[in-house]
Amino acid sequence: MYETPELDPDAYLRSSAIRIHDAEGFEGMRRAGRLVAEALDMITPFVQPGVTTGEIDDRMREFTLDHGALPACLGYKGYTKTVCTSINHVVCHGIPGDKVLKAGDIVNIDHTVIVDGWHGDSSRMYPVGEINARARKLIDVTYEGIELGLAQVRPGNTFGDIGYAIQRHVEAARMSVVRDFCGHGIGRLFHDNPNVLHYGRRGEGATLKPGMFFTIEPMVNLGKPAVKVLSDGWTAVTRDKSLSAQCEHTIGVTETGLEIFSASPTGIFRPKFD
Ligand code: MF3
Ligand code: CO
Ligand code: CO
Image (cartoon, rainbow, N blue to C red; front, side, top):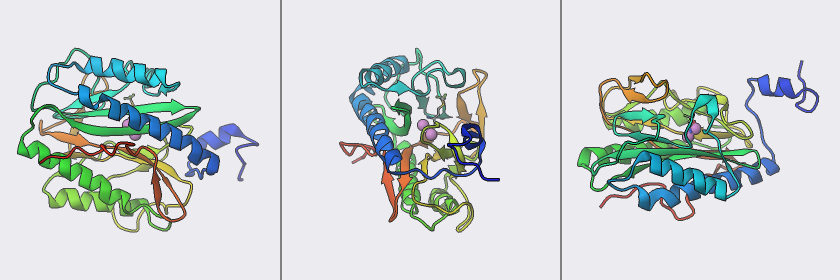
């Protein structure tokens, strides 16, 4: 039997259905997405050789709190930091600390804010000083992958269309898509239904509908897709020690396509190399 969220809030939270949000949800997500993008913009000039990941974490936490938002990761399932900082062969969920960034590193900074109960979740790659051609190529393919995935977002297409577009591009470049982590529904909940796979087949999976909110956050490895989680319980690394990259947007499906809530106000989501 179908129960409306108003009648039974617990049934709403338990439901595996993909939530459809209204105009008020879009308003909330616009504000959350903008703030997470502003935080990732703000940190850009500080990602330099010699800085520690802990210093980056401190700046991101202070910026978030100063703007009246909450850092969603802080305290989430026992996580003790504001952001994830994933360097080189770290795939995701690297924990900030004393680690010093050095020239040639590539680091993903993943941040999630809560603004008036709405979540904005985004991550980008940051090259540290000059990086080599293989690292540049990996970052380019990862961003091309998310762009091709985003281009599939419109009512009537499926989640499989998104995954297929990403996987096809990554594998054509002889790189691999990580299978063990995926994107997710988002909104008032941080991690909601559905799982958003970054691989798949055209036409498979749920059909996209206006009002769905979710992340797309492909992780791409130069080597094989296999990952393992270190003994800290968080840090995921490539098993073959190959370089890994990721980027993430929070989006909403509209009547005609999509709205990218976490778009950078200054247009610096994607690092450009000359
Ligand atoms: N921001 C990550 C995501 O994209 C989640 C990090 S959870 C944490 O879903 F606890 F590790 F911070
Ligand atoms: Co996410
Ligand atoms: Co994230």
